[in-house]
Amino acid sequence: MSTVSSAVSKTLLTVLKAPVEVAGRTFLSISLVLGGMLILILRMIKSVIPPDIDRREFFRNLHWMGNKSVAIVAFSSFFVGVTMVVQATIYVESIGAYSLVGWGSGYIVLRELGPIFVALMFSGRVGSNNTAELATMTVTEQIDALRALSIDPYSYLVFPRVVSMVIINFVLTAIGDTVALIGAASFSSIAMNLDLHVFWRGIHDYLSTWDMWLGIIKSFIFGFIIAVSSCYWGLNVKGGAPGVGKAVYSSVVSSAAGIFVSNYIITFAIG
Image (cartoon, rainbow, N blue to C red; front, top):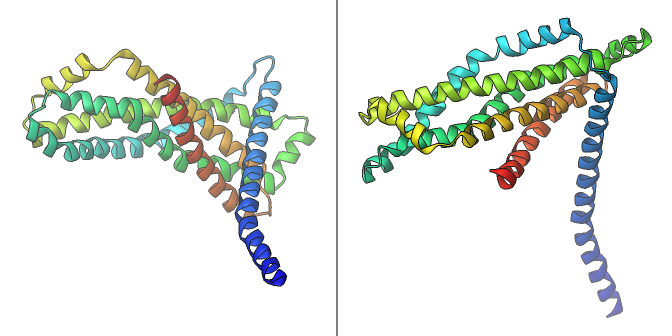
């Protein structure tokens, strides 16, 4: 009897031990990543006191990050706006609430969908590219070469990229929101014969200035999260050349997680 009880106890211990170990490893991994990102932020701040930025690197990043992202963001955002109206058409026509189409589109785009959608695209397009570039420089020891030349990689590489990505994500969000609303207005005019004046009037009358500011705040925070995440994984790549792909994957996943978590916190706290 005691042998059976002992076997059952060991089985239960094994069953309960596995999820606890997984939870513990997950918690430690997340803590290490967040701690590493915090250290990166502190090193970056320390390296630029007093404030100084490499203008050539800054404008180079502004150009390639923004110039190659505007078209895809605008194109995708237009159809986001159209799809939103397609989904709402049945319900709007059934209750005749045409005056609320503009308000609903503006509320969703400016506060939630616009900043998140653009940030996810920005992470996949620019954040991954930034991680791959920094990871390649780390693997090929170019980062070590900069240190050997007494050039701080945090002030020369990280800081200009972080500032550029924060600015560009805000600009892309503004463009994406505008194009999405244009798409929503155009399709509502075609599908529901809605007067464009009624659409834009709904946005003007029912949306507050705070709705717009909340989207702006989110765009800056999301851009900062993407920048820090992509730089962290790029500078902490492991495993040589094969590790570059893993770093890019980790960067995109952690950026997406950070975007959704921070969006919840911002909306819950001040939204």
